[in-house]
Every structure is written in C-alpha cells, then in structure tokens.
Image (tube, rainbow, N blue to C red; front, side, top):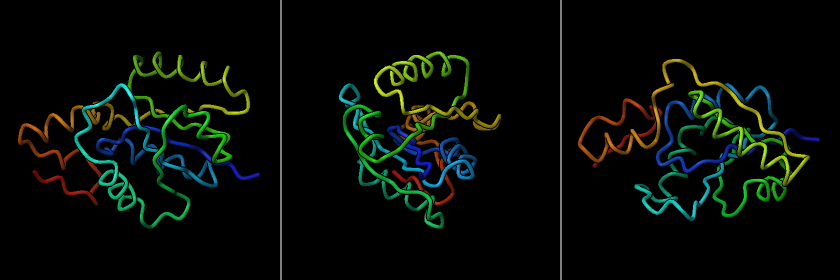
Length: 155
C-alpha cells in the first residue's frame, strides 16, 4: 500500500518553512498531497486559491511525488477520499504543538486509520508564518525573504 500524506493548510502564501517541511518529509512518503483547505472561518485570504496552487506547483515542479489540490470540509474526510493514511504537520513552537495535538487527537477519534506525523521546523524558519509574510507584504516590506525562491511577491 502506498504511503500517502496530506499536508493541509491555507498556504496564504506558502513559506520557506512549509517548503522545508515538505522537502524533509519526501523520504518518508510515496506521495505528498499539499492540500489547500478552504476554512469557513477565515475570510481574509490575501491570495486567491489559484495563485496559491500555482506558487506551490512552481515550488515543487521537479518533484513527481507531490500533488497540489484544494479541498473543503474535514481533513480526515479528504484523507479518506485520497486514500491517505497520514496527515503531515510542521511544528514551530510549543504553542503550535498544543494546538496541533488537540487537532490530531480529534482526527484520531474521527478516523483511527489516519496517523498525524509532526516534523519540527528548522531553527531558521521558526519565526516565519504566513500571517507575518502577509503583513510584511501588505505594508510594503520585502516578503520575498520568507517565501520559496520560485515565488516573486509583488504588489
């Protein structure tokens, strides 16, 4: 059976931290689906889903083990639809761990056959969040410092 992982998030935009987690997870899985989730509570997306999909595909254009998709609903339901047995998550801080642990335990109740795998971010990416990148971008700073080299954020 193929080891398929879903890496869910808004990726608004994808950051160097996201890129690092995916690259480091590649040896662990046969396929990683980077899944752009539509969050009903989050209405302030800065970049369109199409733009985010394009950026992610550009970032991983030379990696055949990566697919990019958009989804709505529960991540575990999307995992089951895609025959994925794993959810991949990156952890930057202990606060991330507490938040992600609660989600992982809930997912485990909903789907006992799906395991959450956590990777720690590398130290140089610990402070990077999509929220911070959006703020830098909106306020005229050089947000390109925080996103993969294949992306050029311009206002």
